[in-house]
Structure formats: C-alpha cells, structure tokens
Length: 335
Image: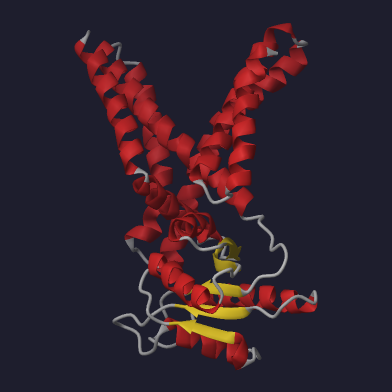
C-alpha cells in the first residue's frame, strides 16, 4: 500500500488548499498529481490481480487515454470547423482546430522519428514528448478543476452580484454571451430574495469601448430594467476596460458601501475559474459563478483561457520548458 502514499499526500494537500481558497491554481495541480500517483499505485497492483481485473486497470491507465487522445483530436478539428462557420476565421476561433491538428501532427512525428533509428532524433522526440506531456498535464489539470470549480454554489447571503461586461453589439446592444451572464446574475438575485435573505444589489461592470456608444454597464442595466428588475436594485461600475479593472473597480464600489461586503461574481462558464483567480488577486471577497455558453463556443474559449493562465505563470512554466529543452539538447550532444 506504500505505492498509494504519494496519491494520499497530494489528496490531503488538495483538500487543505481548497479549504484555504478555492480560487488557487495550485488546487488544479494537486488534483492532477493525485490522479497520476493513484494511477501509478494501481499499476503496482497489476501483477497480483486476476487477469480480467488487471486488464481493466491497464486499459484505464493506458488504453483509454490513448484512444481518448485520438478522439479528442478529431473532436477539436470538427469543433474548429464549426467555430469558423459560425463565428468567422479569427485566430481565436481557430484555436480548437489548431489544437486538434497539432495532436495528430505530434502523433505522426513521434511515429516517424521512432522508425529512424537515430539517437539524435530519439533525443528530439523525447524532448517534444516531454514538452507536450508537461503542457498537456497542466491543461488537463486546468480543465478538470475548472469543471469542478464550476459546481460552486451560492452559500448564505450576499450583498452584491457582480456581472462582468463584454463587448456590445452595434455599440449599444447586449449580445447573447453577455445576456447569459445577466440572466444568471438575475437568477441569483431572485433566489436570494426567495429564500428570505437580504436583497443583493446587481452591480453591472464595464466601461465604454472605443467602438461603443454607451458604457457596457449602462447597456447591461437597461437590459435588466427591461426584464423587470427594479432600478433601485442596480449599481453601475462604468470605468473598467479589462477584466482586471472590472474586478478592481467593482471592489472599490462595494467597499465604499460596506467594507465587510460579500459578493458573487458572474461571467461565462469557460471564464469562471480564471476570473476567480483574478478576483483573488484583486482582493475581491467572493466566488465566481459561470453562466451557460453555446457548446460549440466552449472548447476554443477554454483553450484560450488556459493559454492566458499558462502565460500568467510564465516564470515557472518557461523555466520548466527550458529545462526540458536543455535536457533534450544534452541527450543529442552526448551521442
């Protein structure tokens, strides 16, 4: 049973870290390490298990991930084509297609190099696989914990429901993506009233972009009023231009009214975990909840969020990737 000690250790670290703050990225890494060491522990049991059970464990650890990788690449390519058809050919919309094509290219590259019989090419292949494995591990950690974090529920009373803005259609109209956030925010607001708690203020957050006729906060507030929300239940933060400013300026508004405020921040589900990390950094006292997003939109958006998180932790990530490249070069030169 000693083989399961590392998994148990990282599970404890995961639990302690989540209890400290659910908005930490290290929670995702601890979860991923727990699952990896659990898999290793299960593999150590294989020699002493009945054949059928041993086959199931090996399939779970090796076969399913391998087949899942191929299936994922096909899905991402298909999703990318859907994104291009519905949203246009912007670089952001091509992310899922490029990710799927990249997975297939990597598989073909490794299979081709494996047949070269060259130690130098073997070293290159090792470096590519290690780099890809590291990035893939972080992405799967991010994805798994983002889904887990997305199950966050509102507990107790809140003073504010902060809704983060995004670009307006035609300069003054709320687009479907933003309308989803507003519906979620209003649902939280109404649920708080229905349970007999305090009436939270709906804080719309977003300034006026260069191509917008009104501030996003104003357009959001007008949309909510048209949907029947009393105007006195609304507050506006209309200076912010970025998500960081959304959170910082909203915090200023809330603290000015009540330094001990408690809030819920609403954005779209693909953005919730990263926004939660940003809210923690900004000192916002509250969790982040996600609103529904069109299914075809979610994969590319999630990849974009991961790239942003990866870059935010670039000091560590570049250092580790650089070490992998150096190892690969050292292996090639030692031949």
